[in-house]
Image: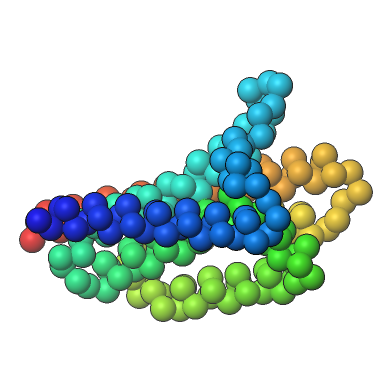
Length: 199
């Protein structure tokens, strides 16, 4: 049955990921037990709550876009490709925020300016590739979200001596930006589903 094959592929995919991570941990001198450590727990529920809120908001666009793509893929179109690309792009952003890839790259000697440049180029390619589709959506919300995010990144690049103040001034724009970006993709996917139901 088709469902059985899908389940086999899904479980096989995750078993492959687990095997690769176990292999990497063993070759890096880590215990495989460390792969299952819980995220850091804090003494009070509010500690880290805005970071967690930001990460939850980061999870909305890829979830909504990829879920909607699963419904729309039987009707291939530029809009469907836009939703898929949006899901993959925002999913990459989510992975970066959870695993702090840019920090690991900096520790490996790849400077933060270069990492930001690469991310900016990927964003520019995405915007250029789907300019027409974006122009047919309420893109002002997306521009607002990206603009607020740029403010947060700009504050971080000022290297203010007071780290607590920097984290606060950078964190608030990041939460607001991601709320706007999540709302934008929610609207885009909702409109795409409505159009598909009319066909």
